[in-house]
Amino acid sequence: MKTIFKSFLLISFFTAVTAITACSDASSQKQITPRNIIYLIGDGMGYGQLSTLIMENAVNKEEYEPSQVNRIKHMGISTTYSADNKVTDSAAGGTALATGEKTNNGTLGLNPQGDTLTSVLVEAAEMGKSTGIIVNTSILDATPAAFYAHVPERKLWDDIALQLSRHTFDILMGDGLMYFNDREDSLDLIQVFHNKGYAFSDSWEEARDLDMEDKMLVLTNFKYLLPQAVEKALEWLDQKDNPNGFFLMIEQARIDGKGHNNEIQGLIFEMDVMDQVMKIVLDYADTHPETLVVITADHETGGANIGYDGRPFFSTKGHTGSVVPVFAYGSGAECFTGLMDNIDIPARLRQLMSY
Ligand SMILES: [Zn+2]
Image (cartoon, rainbow, N blue to C red; front, side, top):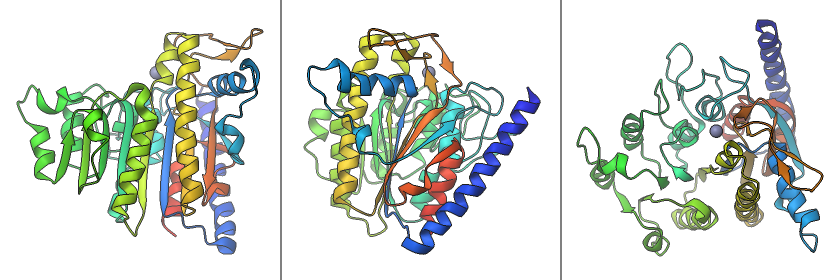
């Protein structure tokens, strides 16, 4: 097992080094400096999930309909193993995608020794970019939390919410209100955000009509409304019009649960939601050419594959160690091809942001 891990590490090192060379060469010719970065994560979205989307559109519908995958020219694959397991959970997977360092399953934003890790989202904020997180489950769940929290156990929701309140990201959209206003320590974190200049809403019906204020906090369950939430966030970021651009992290979090529950129709539905989100962000990159979109997954869930009926079937109710897709589109997309490890993705984002 140790030998396998060592060779994985060697592969990671090798791919990281080659990536830097490839990006540097490209930059010297073309000056790749994406102003805006959209980092879209499909929780549990492996190749079976992607095959589901493509097959539904290409084969199972009465007429062929291209999926958004058809638009993407720069593709790679990524390994997802964590520091202590060949099969990662979302906490270690999210930490790798957010910070560029591996950790143990269950841990968020800390390395296995307990040292604090910094995410690319926090670094983007420090560079003066506008920043945002959008997720269609709790904003305290492992994947979004990996971008701002540092806890040894992913279910420390009260601590994670408190840590989020110490940041000043411009747009926060997700579920989890009770950990902000009905806490065991009686702190009113909504008031904390309010004091920091946030406009707050717990209703999508209300939030969708709001204009961008200094900062926005929307705590509600977006479920299938993720595409509309992403559209709104991009509208707000355009209103903000930060000369340094923005870094927006989006998670379609609900693919994972369909894999865990082995729900065929549910998976088809959630991959369609993913396709709608991809359309919005790719369209945005088309009309805002200094934008880079990177799409990937923290891991695969369910061991999904396509059967003789053209529909998905599952081989487990857990996560798998299967490689996942990496798609890149727009400014700097050429830096995200070939075999990567999950920690290479934020390393490449850092490199592009630092030009
Ligand atoms: Zn899962």
